[in-house]
Length: 113
Image (tube, rainbow, N blue to C red; front, side, top):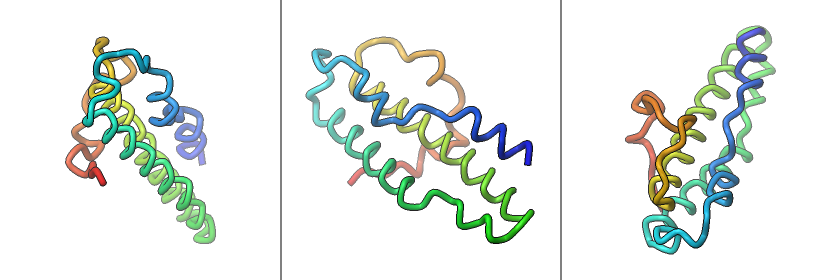
């Protein structure tokens, strides 16, 4: 149960919200790569909302572990999408919260429409 609480307590920022916080006056903002990254982040967020992972609660104590794992994976994915939005849409340096190893977060799984 504490793993679930810890996972939920450290929620990563929505990549869509993060993208909206970037300057649309940046030279990269209107680029096709930026538009594609923002669209992919929006698609991911929509899928995440449609399948929140709470259906595992029906499995009792085993379900709590699955929920925690799903939520942890979602946080990693949010960070990965926000990082990609930043890299494609901003000329500014990558913020510290988006730095670090993202290889385990599934970088190769990111698909664009």
